[in-house]
Image 1 (cartoon, helix red, strand yellow):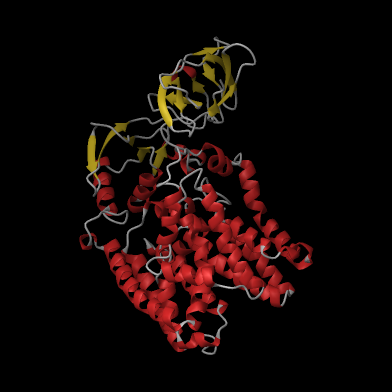
Image 2 (cartoon, rainbow, N blue to C red):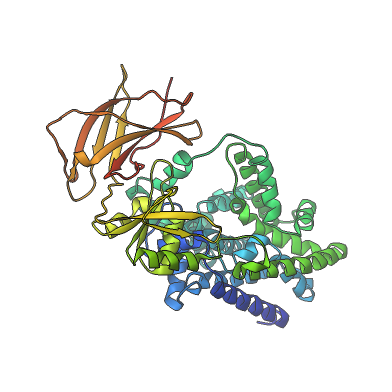
Length: 552
């Protein structure tokens, strides 16, 4: 063991692993972690926003621990594994003399540091990207059946981590197109696809909801250079941290010497170019390019082993980064260290306050999968997000969360109410009101299917009832939202619909009712899309229809 891993390496690795465990235990969840914890309460082969790896890791953690550590334990394990694989990917014999430099370098990568304890899809993406590159390097040297099988399984794990993983696999392949004639490479790809079949089946069974949302339904905004393209460049500085100058300097000076080093270059340039182009269409989030951290860490460490000047600077700035990041980690737990409220601050307090005021009844949050999942995690009481036309779909739109509160007394918490039966406040001073509903009934899974007229102005509307019970039509009111070309909702109006069979007063289970309607004249200029929603029992209109482009 000490031949590959010096004692100092093992000691520092154990220290960081212990640090991450302590951090995990004392730091409250961030909202996305709570949402992914909610995923794990009902294990499946896919979820609305992501594939299933993040839920799988949380489920394993929950078998071993309770509370926050029961969400994050596997992230600590995968982070330690990432450090190990990065060390193995550097074959320069000088590395044993610069163990401290290695840890200062990798620990300084801001998001890689954060994902050492936070459980997000990118946590697994980083680990499996490193493992994929290590196995690919072995495959190039010795394409044995064992390595081939492991490579295929790792590619599947990458894809189960996050859809962005396809870019990692694609750009490594483009760096070595000769693989197209390699039978072992095809065996690895075939095995990966077989392992991914359950997710393909899940997508099919759920009408490809994830793909449809990310590619078509997701709201966007008009292009702004400082938010889109400039933001892209700033994000790629932020994910590296204070060492960004030396890391990117090492990358731009790096020369390929073999097929594997070529893969590292293709991976970084490929992902950066892909999202640079994307930045002209939408805002690129910082974590979308996180996979470049792995090849950049390999390249930067190799470079400082041969460059004494850069090695000194990385050591000095790395120490500064270490102090700042440790300070930030403490602030995540103890807010008074910095005058800013973050997601890890005050969640237990507002949840306890709301639980007491709600009297323990389930909570229905309007348009907030974040607060619904956070509340359920810390209270243990069922909570759901009821999404309407002003918001977007999420996991609560496709699972059976409605049924957990149907017919029960609930506390309904709107987004912008000015009064209510109860009031509670978050640590950032945001105030919310809630109203009790004795018999909660919502029908968010009713499907509105619109057919445009071939001639004239009268549209056809089919409303399908997927539930196992009948629904009185008198309980339903129809609304229409108008959006701009970026699918941002700008206007909401009542919609008059005409029942083709007016004698029908009931929408039977698994049946369809037929209407016609004319588009009401919008107040906004040049709307790009319209969408039909159903308001049931006085609730806000749901996301029952799909955005439909308005043609002139």
